Image (cartoon, rainbow, N blue to C red; front, side):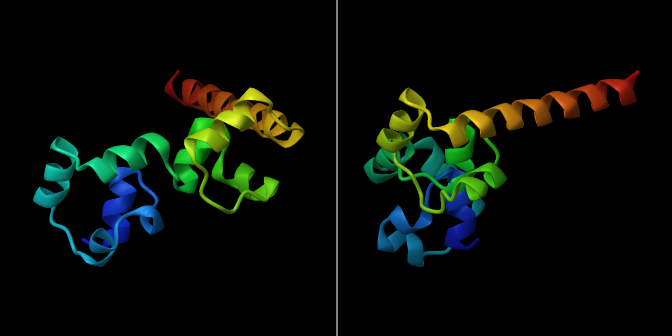
Length: 115
């Protein structure tokens, strides 16, 4: 698989990975080995970031669209995410509320379909 696919499956931001990782191709066995016994650089990236947008959105409790509406286009680190959560700007408060509403509505629709 391509490095971008492997990075997505590992939940890391590809440009922050070592050049060797960015230029390699991976098998499922390679990916399983990285998950089972991650090298130090992978442990650090997973802990400190920078993180890809989908991980940033999850950590902030918003959608990827919400990040785009807020103008967040760059990968963020754990420290940056922590700062946003500690003192949330107005856009983050609004996007978190919107995301909660969307998730609740989807759950309501699923429950209605299942009933």
